[in-house]
Amino acid sequence: MAAPAIATGYGGRLTVDLGALKRNWQALSKVSRGALTGAVVKADAYGTGIAQASRAFYEAGARFFFAATPDEGIAVRAALPEDSHIFILSGLYPGSAPLYVGERLMPCLASIPMLEEWLSACIASNQALPAALHFDTGINRLGFRLNEVSIVKRMIEQIGYQPQMIMSHLACADTPAHEKNRTQLALFTSVMAQFPGVPASLSNSAGLMTNRENHFQ
Image (tube, rainbow, N blue to C red; front, side, top):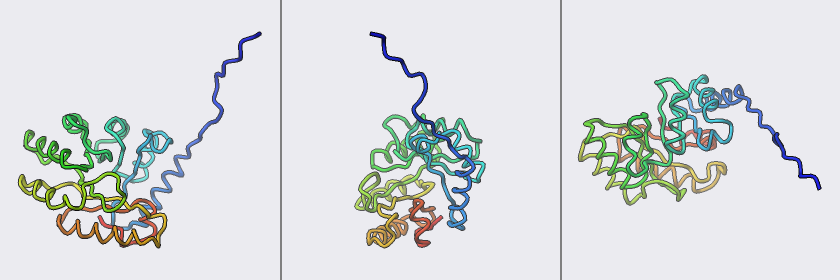
């Protein structure tokens, strides 16, 4: 009996329209008006190719990028010019602060241990290393809990640190009338009040398009 043939090709092919990616980002940027619009390129830019997608968004005008992990952040850094700002959504991995600093990656700090390590790196380097503070206002995923806001505030004030941004994530933005959207907006507004002058981010794409109250900086 003959051995079965070994497939040498692929069962399907994905063609990525980079022009469409650019137009989509520019359309969202127009909706957000005065607020900065970032590009989320996690999970290999949702399968479209992190390097080529990041370059397309950069050409469209994006300067703020969000990757999932440090290795993705490094790939984005390698693909883009120096004026790109790259955040890591999964936060700070234990012992990895030197890597983030060397690659100019900004962690979205989401726990007290992450914040402790990052502030220690700031003290050791005598620099206010940029990072975001991520607060959980209801998605129950990543983020400082609301009962930790005062702890976070005290920790950063002790060394005079100001974060690059505070952020949260809407859980039900694709259902505009959902009560949780209003609840999260109110909770996030209360968090913002504890960090005056710090830029804030709440909206994903759906939140950006459905409620201008979700637009911050």
